[in-house]
Image (cartoon, rainbow, N blue to C red; front, side, top):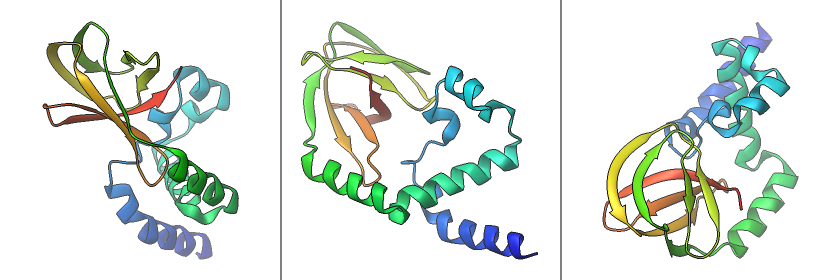
Length: 149
């Protein structure tokens, strides 16, 4: 009974954070290889949801280490303005974005968007939790990304 009350309390506190699209969930954050290696791919849906809620609770500055790391990242990170090299067709799953500044970013969410643009300008920003999003200039389209190079 105590475990259910604790879980409900964590869910109640974490629910507003879950409503934000800033937390994609463990399945979107890990690669297929990481999911298999960690055993997360074997978890039931309720277990995945509980893990996601724990991650949200933990990253919401519950951990002093995370709190310090987030503060440093927030101070140090400046929005990146660049352009995607070549013909850009949108995103679908694990799309990578090669920027003119030499950086390569990868899509974190499984969203899809189809377009055709040449060298579109993009801006990458960081949210409160330290996650990044890429916005395509003039299209009002954003996607969560992670830097891979």
